[in-house]
Image 1 (cartoon, rainbow, N blue to C red):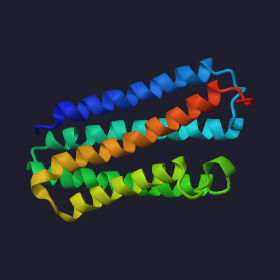
Image 2: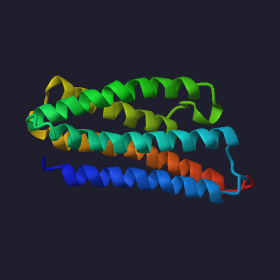
Image 3: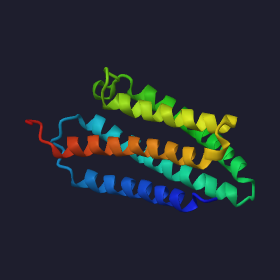
Length: 168
């Protein structure tokens, strides 16, 4: 599998982002713009998304150890992603739908996050059903990158709220 190094790098970046967010959370002064419940949820979801991406990066590597052909490994990894991510996203939507700072309101950051999540799921679905066999590795990595972008956006929201005084 050509993409092994790239997948492991994505996993490292994901875990690094999760660890760095914990440090930012400890250093924050909590005079931020968003309520503590919103910031806590952003931090929690960002950690969950980052760790999901890390796990998603390891799955094809582990599957390839069973010596399936490369295409089958990508399909199994895509199915595993969808089995975990879709229920997670439904739960995430249910827990954020009544929070004012987390609502989908026109084109906002939350809309971008949901579009990235749905894009990832769509790419994984395409892989699962067997389209684009020759580009399966590239599409899988693209999907992980899109989902990692969600974690990065949530981190930026959390950090900006944590370190920005309410007066500004």
